[in-house]
Length: 69
Image (cartoon, rainbow, N blue to C red):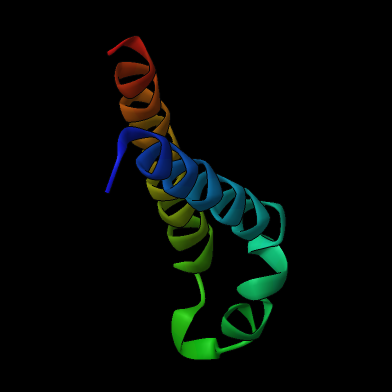
């Protein structure tokens, strides 16, 4: 795989991650209704959000490095 293809895949990945982030609350709404998870959902949502943002930042950092080559 060439550099251009790697950059495109990482950019596509970031777009997908952004879609997930935009709809994270909706995606977790069923879990929020589960009484067994009461009190945990805010922490889980924050954890998922932080994980996805970190993943996007890592992708962006790699994209930047690849473009500098």
